[in-house]
Length: 202
Image (cartoon, rainbow, N blue to C red; front, top):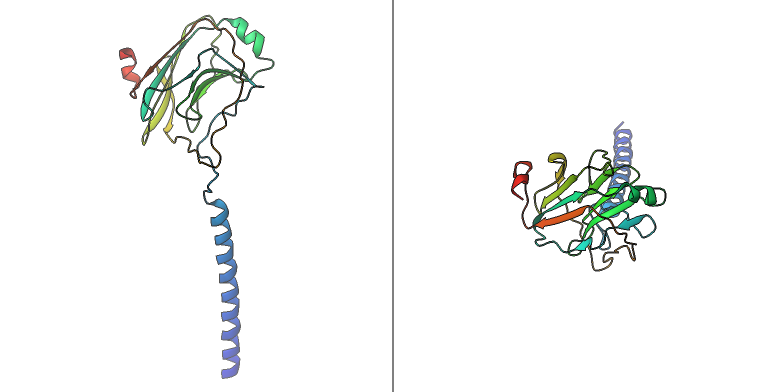
């Protein structure tokens, strides 16, 4: 009887050890594969390239402050721009920060909405080719929030998580994106974050 009990305990112990090793091995595998590697890039950005993108001249600019800032875009582009590019292009780039990788303000020609930020913020659909002036404001603060405001109304907001670039990957900037002359575009940058009730002061 005693030997039988010892045998059962030994068998139970062996099964327990096997189960423990399987669970430990699975957890280690998931942890190692899910861990951030040296060549990873965090945050989200817009997958633009020279084939699906056209940009406004002088859209590549440096932010006056990479810790916090605001970009105010007024736009009233002619409908001819949409007619010319909407069949073959996906993005119209209004702003691309030269000193903060991946931070852009673009208009998605297919979905008819603005996109900006990291992680990506999106506006509701809006037709910027309707002959009216429209204002898109993007504002951010490292260690804080980012938001976009469309025509004075906050439409999207999240924690700001800038893209981290490693020595291994660097940052691939889309090469040789064609530019097109676009009238009715005005852009201003500020070295501080703003809120919706501060828009009339900038």
